[in-house]
Length: 323
Image 1: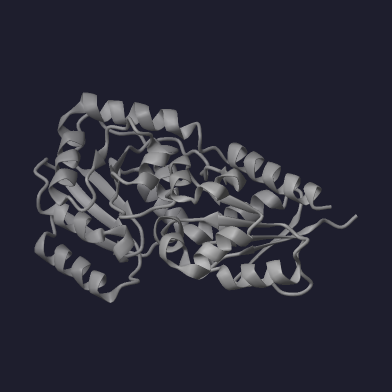
Image 2: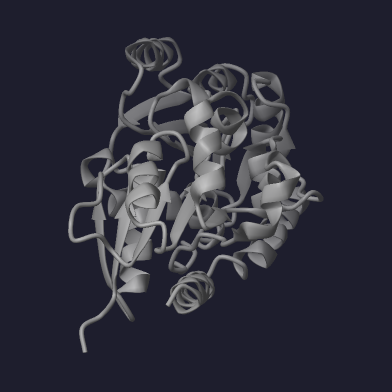
């Protein structure tokens, strides 16, 4: 008996190596345990039994066409970040996507407040995941403390705050490293300028393969995420499942991932506050240990087994209900 087909429509494919692609890649792997799953920028005939669309605005056209041509087949819309915290509030095509989809998926629970009340009943939270890595062995008194930021250079990620923090940190051995390709040329120029102005504190490494990035992260002292908006950042998961504490901008998407009581938040755009957290993580071992403990507790939410079970449960129910 042939497997039912599922198409994951993603605005980003492998060459982008961003969060949307990592979600699509991982979900396709999970679904193949039971279904014939493929990733594409659009679906093609013969139509799949179920469509999964990532991003309300950027995948609006494929989702609209699928729902119009196959109203009897279920669809899932995954709200991945800028669509949840910006587009669905201002863009008619994104708003239409919310209404069309059979089910909505959020990557963390705080995002539920962004949805119109009448749509919350069809929304489901599925935490993303990453395989746990054995935390790297660290010396008792290391001479170098790498603070890693991971994300392509674009305004939503606010890399300027990370760059500005580099000139404000005071703790000995602190070195701020940024991994990510240039999506905004002006930010690429800013990164080069920051590296030239503060070479002992800041380095931009450019884009790296995912596996190499994860290994670099595993050996970091901490990871900084400065984003202005996030749907549910996979880099947070990759940090906490590697035993690396996170220093995070205090936004809804990060709170949904790390919890309201997390100690490592700083106001968005506040480079001085981020620098102060970096310094404290290096000079206050008890506080750093508390961050590690909080992250270890959250890591239990981000296992591949839990993500796959939640995804398969949703897909199975939608396909069974629509038979």
